Image (cartoon, rainbow, N blue to C red; front, side):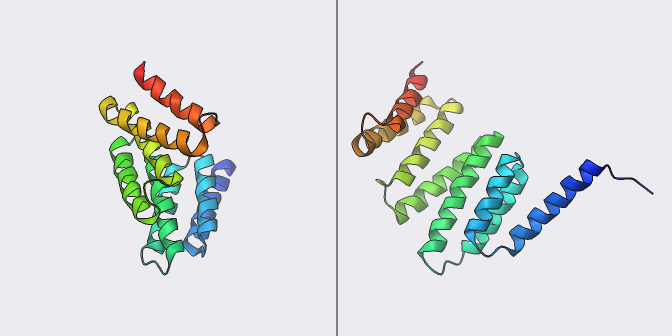
Length: 166
């Protein structure tokens, strides 16, 4: 008979418990919480599974809430792929998120601008500077106009642009 190390047993039980919670979850808030737990533990496979569950749950929207949650989890997907270094998959998710956010909110909404900035950062990391620059400039323009040139968010967006020019 094989003996399972105690720590491995607890980790395995935790993973099974989390997967069971996710598959029976009825709310996006619960899925979001499980996603955040996975992210904190750097369990990106779990994060992608939660995203898929949320997207499936929202794929037949019964209202605007489902559509919004689908878009939110699609944005999470881009971030997870970026964090994992899967830049092509991240780009695809961010571009899909932008299309959906444009339909839901319009191009002047903060969520759209945040995703645009994330895409700019991704392009920057990929060495696609000519594609990153116009996105950074658009992001800076929006933030300056809507949040103010003295906001911390504007300072961060200027810093992103400055690192591009280095």
